[in-house]
Length: 89
Image (cartoon, rainbow, N blue to C red; front, side, top):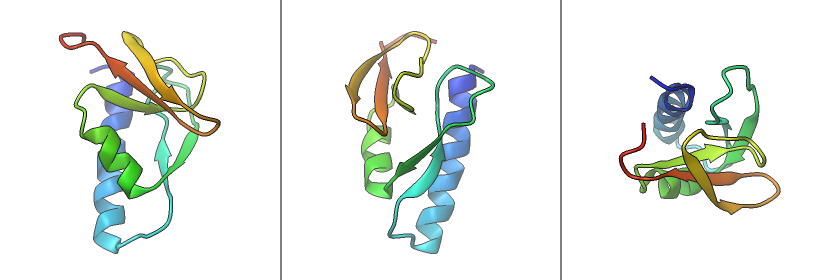
């Protein structure tokens, strides 16, 4: 399992708990970059998170952080969406 997939799995559990608790404010998610030593936190609403997850190859990352095998499709000062090409590990 790639580091970004481990971070993504943790974020899925964070989202489940936030939804269970009915959070209405931004949630601190983990950066899903490929750096195993990254400790960046992303402040993302559940709606933004769900939108990212509606694309199975999309990852959330801090701006400037790399997801191996992916390209940045959208970025602002707080968040980047990186997407892997289909079939990429």
